Length: 457
Image (tube, rainbow, N blue to C red; front, side):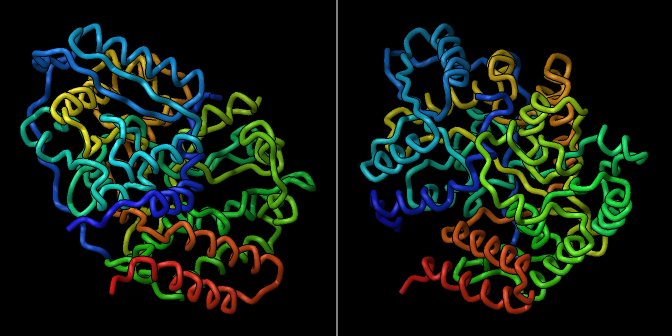
């Protein structure tokens, strides 16, 4: 029996969970848990996607977040759909990031979501498990939504309770961004695309010795939530236990994480907290990386082009560091922005047809132009490499490699945002002198309290 939706519950969940998603969902232009079951696949579809149109006239509502630039892209895709399906009118609803999610929470509670609803992985578990979205598996099984050209590792990565509730329109993965020219000015070559934690630490120390005073090798990975979650996965654990009633890893995992980063911090390789704790006005133009204060930065892959436009130096991305002796060599993970089918829709088949068109049709894909990151269909990604911005080519190539070895990471359950905030507090406390073990003990207590929200009587 599904939990009953309430506006207050959704607003609280969305407000907590979406803080970390905002950067991942911004476009690249200014503007030990069991693995889920496999996704059913069908034979490749021809392009453009050819599915029989609905017989009678109808209206479908579609909602998304975005600015003027992104709205134009959505409008162009909607116009193309209507041209091919003149009996269907797409009623468009859009808002800025924060306003969109406030509105969606209210609509979900009132069972009045747009038929086609833009979604993110950060709230997927909450919305999927509580019945706001329809599972897409029946539409995948009968071929209305074609996943035949989508890597299995990608389709598995955003399942909730073994079901698909979203189809990504753009996918970003946590990466390490590199200022190539700054490193070359220090008479060194940038680290390899696949670099281990040990190799990264050695590289940071060597680079720091050659950088000008006041310039640092890297930003603080110890304070970066995606990097922290990757470490947990590489150690063989998940952020929470299977029922999400407590953290899913022992405190020793976090102690080792902070020891690694505190060693680099004490060695003078890491941007000091006195600098990076200061607010910045623009996430690209005013970032300390753009200001030339460090040579490497943890970020999301879809941010590369945005940073590049404010940097004269050449920027590239490499994978989040490998852990060859870990339970999982890789821990990087994706954060898709997507489209979901509202459970209150009267036209689920037509919504499924539209979503399939948006994510698989080559003409629609070219219009959207990697606005929200890499795309799922392998052949479409290869085709896009011929025309997109050179930095987007790097994003697509990175995603292609990631998809070959993507580790399993559970969808963040309710309470995770508070857990990640507690981890950041622990990192900050350590930088200001709190012993690592003491800060971790405090974190474990706070995390346990945060996940109590999932304990049912």
